[in-house]
Length: 542
Ligand code: GLN
Image (cartoon, rainbow, N blue to C red; front, top):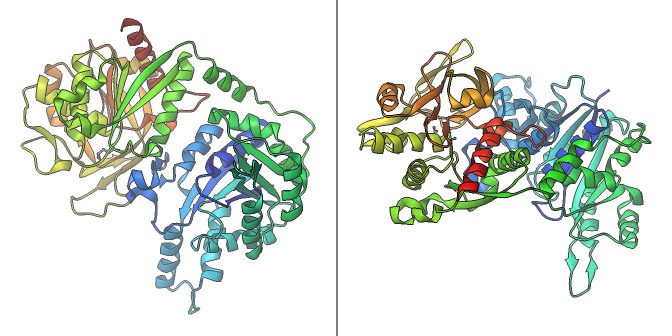
């Protein structure tokens, strides 16, 4: 029997509902249950793919090619369960499906309304494709009280009735602000937020209260009284020093026991939290430190690079070091005389990006890494810029550029107009839609024997997640290889360059895919492990 846990949030946004859901998923797993996590996003975009990373944060790409909310990244990193297209839905997607059905005549002449048609579509999404999972955790994006959230709350109210309390539970995450002048944690915002939920017919079963300090018993009892939950079901969600401590800390506060109790499941035995204790121990007690500069375009919002930052932490865990990240806006390197800022870093990472702004700065950063033998990892755009740099300064192609920035004399990076997906041919034109039309999701890549990446992965055929519209032009392969760049990974048909590296450099790798999306704290991605290891070696030299 699959049970559903709906997670809502109140008081303010950014309380870490995604992380809370992911950590609860991990806790239930540690008790031997199978879990799946889902996110229902109330905004009107069909998916976050067309949103600016500085607006929305990272777009997380699934194996099956969906562009999804970054919380799905947390879910994967905490549970290891690969997210699928059906695990993230938005109001935009729900409405476009409902309207398409209306146009087809599927509603047989009825007036199409939010209730029941939109709410039915939301319920169908939340409960679809459930296999043998013991729990499906559904996070509702946004904050209770938002206009956009209403159809989602109504849908979970209905689902709770239909499934019954034996199969559905509501967890509400709130904030207890500390007021220094009163010297107190305040419960009123939580009371108001629960009242807001009650006004749409939802009584939460468990409250998780974010707080920057321990919550006194009296306050806990007060919240329980006013919000109509048992005192043990008011779970303090205290700030912690590393996100990987969250499952351990929720367990200490009794969250998993409350969930098991609610569903009448056994809870006397302690769950096996050794995986998390081990990770936290390594994060807290590193044997050294390395500094890695991330030279990107969206550094004003660190969430733009959420998975990347975590993958670097994982690389640190694998090498027993702390990875200190220096976020640098690539635009500052557009003037070559500023590149000395990179002096002394132990590794340089240029991540994904779109558009011309800041690209010359990335090219200069890649040049610094190549010439100064600093370990370099270029991801997607970061690979493309490294290839342009190499072409300009090592292969005599001074006019090398990307057609993403306009027509080029030497289009080292060009628009992909067709490629193979499985047995199918995919075609694109320069003037097509931008939403959902990139080369998205997992594609295989063949590694060249004797290359560094072949050694790092320890296998010949790999599969990694992609999100790009442009691609290094295979026509330049011979010329670039003659100048010393190795095309060490290619699509199996040999047409799309997937990885480049510079033999003889201490560590210089560019990948067209996003390895950060697959890294887990308990299973660090080999490229990040190897990159951080190279940074450690560099730190011993400088
Ligand atoms: N803008 C580049 C492209 O579309 C790179 C994309 C990325 O870095 N994810 O190919």
